[in-house]
Image 1 (cartoon, rainbow, N blue to C red):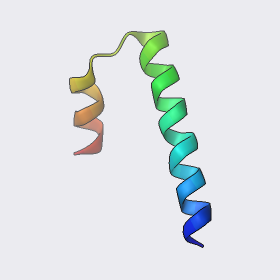
Image 2 (image 1 turned 180 degrees about the horizontal axis):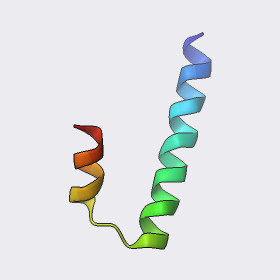
Image 3 (image 1 turned 90 degrees about the vertical axis):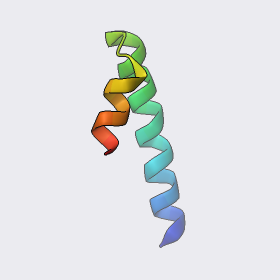
Length: 35
């Protein structure tokens, strides 16, 4: 269902933000992952 996908992507974004902060990744690295 769309709601499941929405919560999954929200959780994924939260996890990515935490990883970014812990590893001090620049946003460019994140953009590379998405492309």
